[in-house]
Length: 189
Image 1 (cartoon, rainbow, N blue to C red):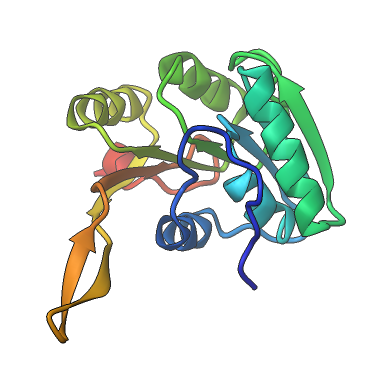
Image 2: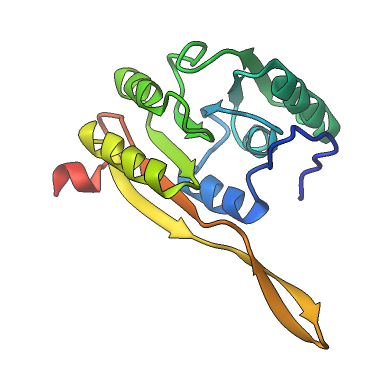
């Protein structure tokens, strides 16, 4: 079921197609505690709340956290969602099973927290090439990188009686695990 985002955070939400891949990589289930860094519009928070037992959503900007809260209410989720106004890694739970970094601010410290607490599934989305390179190295340095996926979505529109496409910005998705029982392709290769 599509989510509704009637309130704007002056920053684009994670696109629906990107959320689909993200959710597939996170493999959230009804026992998971999901944590998100950079909730913004709440698009990922809402999707996670439909799947996980608990959700902790961090946002450093109070006005964006208010937008997350309004959009969450507009979607009527029943899952326990803890909205935290903090700059990560402050405010992150010690017991998260899955973690999504929607922003790149302080990502090294967030990854350190994920390693220290043994987060099983970690996904970070990046749209800037230079940040993607630094983030990939940070995942590698911590031995938590499983894969890097780059994809771009295009949407069709009518042009002179035919279909043409507008492309969204490419997304680099870093996927990893910091749990002792999680498999890590690069760490074991």
